[in-house]
Each structure stands twice: as C-alpha cells, then as structure tokens.
Length: 447
Image 1 (cartoon, rainbow, N blue to C red):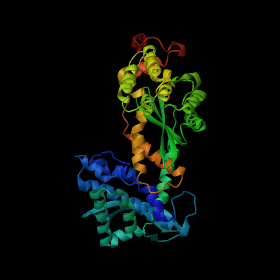
Image 2: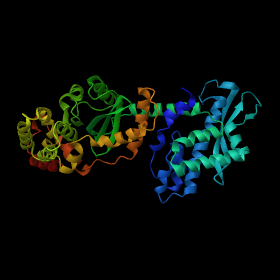
Image 3: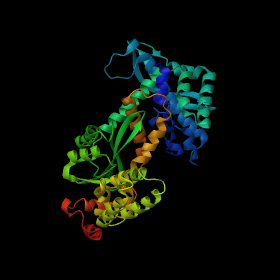
Image 4: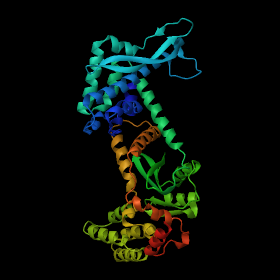
C-alpha cells in the first residue's frame, strides 16, 4: 500500500476523537499534548471563552512544531540517545523561532541539527526554511487550517499542511502507528493495585469482522476505569479468560468479591467463574435479555411481555423470578424459544436485587449500557476508515478511542449509593438473598 493509503487508514478516522473544551491559556498545551492526532477544531468553538484567532494560532503552533520535528527526522532520523544517527548529523536541542500564520507572527520552538565534528555548521530544517522564506507556503498553511475548521474536514488538514512544507505522508503514517501502539501498550500496562474495583463490565463490539472485547471497572467511589481490551468474541471462553487474566497480573485482587455485569454469553460466565471463583457475583444484562426474548415473539405480544418483564425486575428476587417463570409457562406452547430464552440465566437477572441495591444504582448495574456509549463512539469512528489492515490496527484504534472517551467519564448513576454495594459485597456468599430492607438497614448501621 502506498503512503497516502496508509495515512488515510491510520489517520482518516481521527476527526471525531477529541471534543474537550479548553480556556485560552490552555489551548496551546492542549494541542501539543494531542499533536499526533487530527483534532476536530470546530467542536471547541462552542466554548465562549475561546477566541477564534487564539484557537487557530494554538492549533497552528502545535501542528507546525510537530511538522518541524518530522522534517528534522527526515534528515537525522528519530532522536535516540546513544545511537549513531544517519547522514552524519546530530540533534542539537531547540530554540525559539517564528513563522507567519493567520496574519500574525507565530512563535514556535524549532529543533536544531548540526553536522558531526569540531566546528561543524548548523544544518537548516527544510520545513522551517520553507515557512520562513516562502510567503505562499505560510498563506497556504493558514488557508488549510481555516478550511479544516469551517468545513469540519479535519482529516485532510494534517496531510495537506505536511505536503506544503515537504513532510511525506509515510512519515505521518509511521508516527500515527507508533502513537497508537504506545497508547495500547500504556493501557495494558496500567497498575490496578490502587483503585478498589467493585464492579466489572464486559461486553464486545464487532468492527470489520473482528470482535473487540472491552472490560470497564467501577471503583468504590463510583468512578469508571478502562481495565483492558482484547481481540476475540465474548462467546470464546479462551479469549475472555485471557482478558480477565491480564488485569489479575496488573494487581486486581482475585480474592475480593466483585459484581460482574455481562450479557448472556455462557463462555463469558464460565471464564469469570474459572478466574474469580466464588468471589464473583454475576448480574445478567436485562437489556440483552429483554431483546433476546422479544426477538422470538410476534410484534403484537412485544409491548405486553416487555412491560411484564420490567415490572418483575422491580420485585423482590423470589417474587420476581416466580412471575417470570409463570410468564414463560404461559408462552411455552406457542412460543417455546421465547420461553426458553426467558428462563435461561433467570436467577442472575436478580443479583442486584439480592444485594439490596437502590433503584438508582440498579439502573446502572443491571445492564451493560455503560459500555454502549464508548462502543458507539468507536463504531462511529471506524466508519471513517476505508480499510482495516489487520486486528492490531483495530486494537490501536480501539485504545485511542476508549482512552479518549475515558477522559470524559463521569461517576456512575446512583454513585452516592455505591456504599450499599460495597457493604453488600462484604457479606458471605450464603447470606446474599436476605431481605432487601434487612441488608439496607445493616449497611446503614455499618456506615
């Protein structure tokens, strides 16, 4: 594949990745910290604190400094301490410089190179010389940057700016691949000894024929943490076991009792039991269960069954289970598949009820919807990629997408009641199932 195609695949989908708002003083630092990606500039314009000219200047400075770095690398190779650099050149720090952009003198930090040997002269950076000596080049850079904001065609901004100052597309592609690999490695190397994870959500998403399985944890304060991701399917017990084994290696205590929120995958359920044993409590996703049951029913029956199932979920476990068993018995003759689906894993649909959780907390802990929002973001992002080369590329993009989403995650719904879950998980397994009111009263007394 040529350089242009590689860049389109690696970079073309990044247009929706960043959406945080920042004040004027933080703009330049924000763009520098995200300089390896194409940033959706227009989404920042909704912040009334941001002036257009300052925004564009901040973006321009970050992008130009990155392009200057790539231009220097094209001569001397990447910085690497102790390595013999190519073409007899050495890196020689950096110094302030300035270029014209957006009808203003834009200050930038430019890298310095010099030839080896005593008295060797400094070597000019091609991109910096182009911007300093060619008014048409700076005008073109300003035009490209403004066009990207006004049309929201962010994916074309970086390669067009690079082409203007002679930086190749293959350089951009290599840098973006390296950036994604670094993010993925950082995610899978995170220590999990610090956060006290009470809940683990596991779900999967299919991208270009590849399944990405994602695990997200919720700690004792209700905050969310991205625990890990892997390639495979939730129906594959080996894949899920590997996903669960990795957080254990990074410090997740296997002896601590936790709540696992999953869909109806038997392989996933089996892998959790093998990895965590009796310390694992499982809450089946009610949204998945409802969807699966309704898929086997005619349209005329769906509203009635949906209403009765949702009503049963609000009852005490023993009564709710009895109501759903009765519902299954009524429909067993005419709709046997719907009845069988309803009965499968029925006890684990009421795990949260047995723990005595409040309705607000149950709204979050009774389904895998918590993962659906970042999944939707990754799904939308992936539609901009013209060709996925392999599973590793998908994992890199998944890491970038989920890590960016994590920055904006808030605490879970009902997090003020998370102490009830924390207390309930301290009870012995055989005591789970006492009346909700007894458990709540005991939790309040302990708190």
